[in-house]
Amino acid sequence: MQTMTFLRALGCALLCQASLAAQADPLSYARYDQVRTRDLQLDLKADFTQKTLSGYAELTLKWIDPAARTLVLDTRDLAIAKVQVRDSRGAWQMAPFQLDAADAEKGQALRITTTGQPEKVRVYYHTAPGAIALQWLTPQQTMSGKLPFMFSQSQSINARSWVPSQDTPAVRFTYSARIEAPAGMRVVMSAENDEKATGKGGWTFRMPQPIPSYLLAIAIGELEVRKLGPRSAVYAEPPRIKAAQYELADTEKMIKAAESLYGPYRWGRYDMIVLPPSFPYGGMENPRLTFLTPTMIAGDRSLVDLIAHELAHSWSGNLVTNASWKHMWLNEGFTTYVTTRIVEQLYGSEVAQMGVQVDQEELAAAIKELPAAKTALVTRDADANPAETYTDDGIIYPKGAWFLATMEQRAGRKVFDTFLRGWFDQHAFQSVTTDQFIAYLRKNLLAQHPEVMPEAELNAWLYGVKVPAGAKPVVSPRLALLDQHRDAWLQGALSTKELGMDKWIAIESMHFLNDINGRASAAQLRELDQVYGVGKSGNNEVAYRFYLASVNAGHDVSAPLQAFLMSVGRQKFVVPLYGALMKTPQGQQWAKDVYAKARERYHPVTQESVDRLMAAQIP
View 1 (spheres, rainbow, N blue to C red):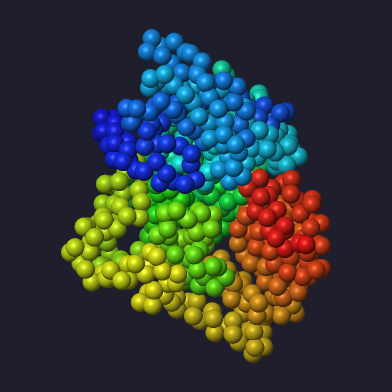
View 2 (cartoon, rainbow, N blue to C red):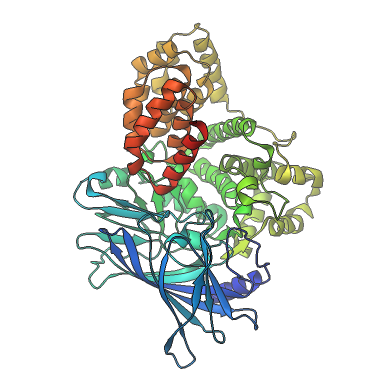
């Protein structure tokens, strides 16, 4: 995008969002109806001995309310040393501040009192060693064992634990940074990364596009980089870099496929970093530097749909962002739909179709297990406790995608693609709400094609607790044939060797293992492992599902399962496995023993989840 066009877009985004109510995001203390961050400058030093980042954050502000004289920032466990404001002569002056009482979920409001409305404010601080966004790994917890490692995870509201900020997706800002790190370690951020940088004088970064705080990201460690394409590269620890380069070889093809559907990639480069195993998620769509779990490295590129998903966020989520986490389906539901379209374009409709069917089946299973308030795409209750009413992650991804796919089927792909690309183009670099999407939908699709989504059905999709009755599930002929073989195998009419599991692709194995969970006997699972080595699969999605089914069937997989739990920190795998183990007294004790050894290897976000799980189930 040309510079002038970009500046106009940024200005429009700020003005368009200024009318949002102060507490439109109940998870933030920031009064962004009064003042907004336009730019952030970080100057920080990483201390691996103390496990802290220390220095200052300089915020450039846009004051909206002429009467406002207080800047309120979100913090969590930050030690604030001092605050300065820059006066009209360009001199820095001390400013009074106070920290409110801490809230267990939201942290503390930092209230800075100003004289007038200064353009710039500096906050000097250091992070806590246990900052929830940051994980500090010892050399022994890395692949080479030579140097320590640190990485962040800011989503959803954890940026405030390492940067004092208006920590809400409603506020977008550009940023720059200078980071000091120990010799021999490379620093990378969700910004422009110079492959040839040496770090002499500090590692410097610039993010020229405005982003919300949850997309602030940093990693420091022994890292190498390999080129993937003209605008893409991968960073990883030296022992993993070759495998990462191989696994991600199709990245440029994916970028081109996405661009052909939804317009130009607007972030310059699409680089990735494969993190240590303790990274709590499959991927995090930090712009210009997607963070990835090593569990996606299967050796055969069978899990590249994860890359397609994180890339798709470059349009849905990063470019057009939910204004608060109440509207998270606008990020994840859209991205799941776009992912399917990218996969279809690259690998064919049969593979894409199987993926959608598995997603929809897992959605049906999740809906059965969750309270009704957690199964709508969005809640109407603006004042409800977000922790109690925000939709579960397992719902918004597939249900949001199914909603969009339903409209595509009825409107026709050509019409719907034009509609969706217009949504991205018209709301680029803005934060949006469900109401804004509904208004755009009515004006740009339903006004011309009302039959696509009647009002009652629209409400059912968005606010209803189930999938509307008119939704057509995807049925893959390939998976339908597999289901026949599954049923015959479960009934003993088909031998394990006749299943032919060694000829399946990953999504078929995942579908099969999902379906036999709770139905197959311990003996059947034992034989399945003996014939096909499922428990030793290099595909972590397959291995996880086999372990889960085995635990539920009483099949002893303690040795490989312990190795898995000790080496993998991805919440999607770890939390359900501990949850299944906790259902029996014997499993509880074993889970406690393993977790006592594995806990330090997990990211604080994962620790928090498993701690809560065990506290709820152990007297």
